[in-house]
Image (cartoon, rainbow, N blue to C red; front, side, top):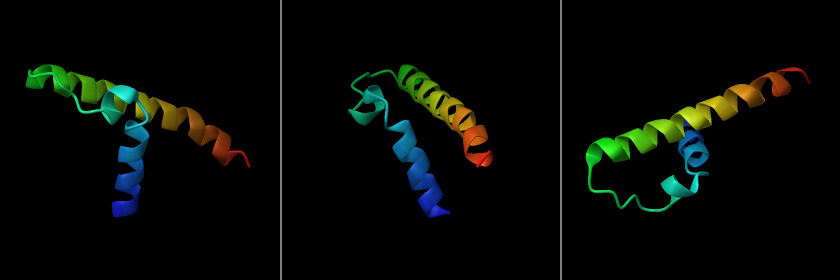
Length: 55
């Protein structure tokens, strides 16, 4: 279980804005950036999954 979570964090950290320290003081904006990054990661995973299942 832990390995899967670490892979998910690594996938989210592909985005440069997440890889670096977020220097925005406002929690709501940082939270919004993280939600967008997670959404992009999930989108990337769903697009990749059908290709892996065809083999």
